[in-house]
Image (cartoon, rainbow, N blue to C red):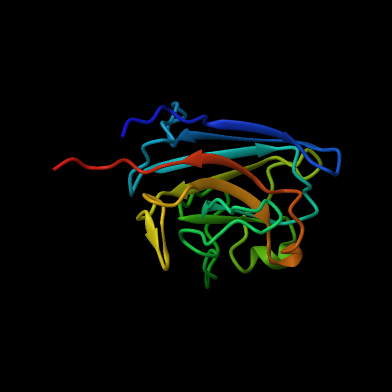
Length: 171
């Protein structure tokens, strides 16, 4: 089955009046074919127009059939807590990123917004295996999502995604 290239950037107007944008590139800033992701690939997801007073998760998740339901399940889960914080400016790639500017949440692994007022962020994703518990992104429709973090799970206003698929090997 042949499939075309997917978009690597998406823009949407939220019910809160904000225009949100997310863009996906390679870790070198090059264009990425989001229709053929591979495990181990490193991606940079940038966003703007988000509500910087609210935390978000950035991850590859199953696209829900109903837009009123939170995206998921997601590859990589919630970022793990770390005993020590990396030096300022250190880039750490992970299957999912948590963006939250509250200092207390940063102690639990959250990355801060680049600019809280503008709602800009940079997330560093390392693509994991396409399969998670009870789902498979080679079969299920998936996307690189932003969604509100655990402090506002029922609020869908920051849900935005770039569709993705995984490369299939021949042979």
